[in-house]
Length: 605
Image (cartoon, rainbow, N blue to C red; front, side):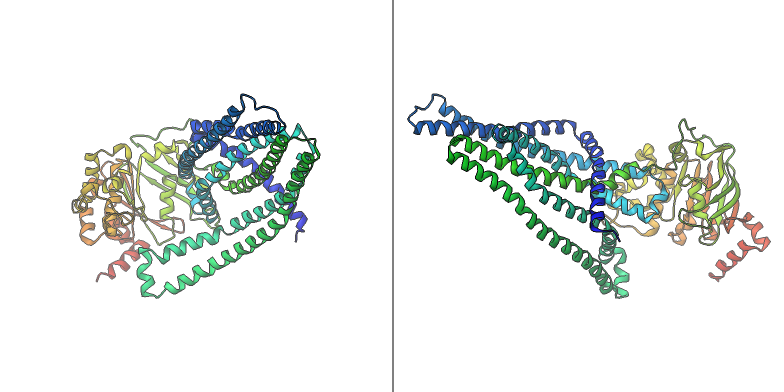
């Protein structure tokens, strides 16, 4: 076990290393609002110089008043001095409000800019990253840091302003007693070091609590969601969910209370050093004024400068320490932006062919999911010819959806290669390749937007009303939309006011319309009839040949009424093609396909 001294040393090394996160943050700030940052900096500089100017004017006023008591007449400019102090005070107040105005604008612009950057960058990362719980923890912290670091941006502005104020006061003190500055700095240092150490403990605690907080968010969602409501009521799970939430939240609360107690006692003790240093300097100046060397104006100037220096040096250390601690929280955001996808376009990548002439070939393709030992696909060999309708069948976990992910290059093969018109998929431009593929997965996403937008997201470049309507007719979603109160402009889902929810089959028809809108050359349908009723499935079959005309169609389905319409059926087992042929041929062979077909048919007898 490490000693406290080693832990303390490691703490400071980590905090100092985290300061490297500040330059990337400031670049984000500058990118988000150059004009606002420039205006904010100018207002802070001018505002920071006003306190010293006011002390200088006050010193002169007190010296004139002291001379007046000694029988000297008031100079003609005396009331101008009073007016100047009033003007400086007014200017300081105005600049303070102007700084607040800039800070408010900057907060909105920065939050917007970083949130957009996080979403854009997340969309470029590999699908494999989203299947890693550690990545989700990092992504969650990055999302929080994208908005929570607004306070850090303001703190950096504050410490800049405090530095200018402290520097100006220090110049004033140096003209009298330079050693007072050393006294002030030394007396404040213990409190700063103690607070910094405890602040790092707060970061480490927050970091360790991330998985538990994600668990709390999940339990909060389960305990009050439409999707879980039926099971919670029927199985009497409400008390269980509540107890789990209480257990996790109590542990987090106890840890936070323990840290807050340490902060209180240690912070209170160490702050006494700073108080002693300030009042020691203050008493020395009063003594020198009573003893004679300093004038009343000089005393006012020095005591004000000492108070300002002490306060601002303490603020600088405290704010800088807070910035250093918050920069630790930036680590995940900075590292998140450094992440690069493994699946990406090569330099000078080729455009995807249009039309596809030779089709798709899998050559000895193997694939192992990250973190697993056994391959899902192993030395897979198969071909899809242009215009062919191919069906994939097999038990769950045999690699059907994985094959689709490789075909669409959401993953790259662990071994082997996939050729499109004789060229490795990795040599094509990724965006160009995706434009040639229309895919609807079984777990398609339900966009809680308008019906038109739900279809248009399939191909935003082809989102004209007539094309959206054509895709809706092709997928039989037009009848669903006609029944909606707002038609194509009807908001779907229950998340927002005025939304209308749909059945699973109705949502699936909209999802199918997205694939048809793309006019892609390769159409991939993963369980296209899973949520459809018998009539809707029959209607889809009637139009199936038209929908697939001129396209290479790949269907994944457990319903043999669907796959029997394919030109060729592939049965996957143990990561390889176990059987191949059309429906009649496979039934005649009496193999695995025939057995699965007979088992399903028996359920309808």
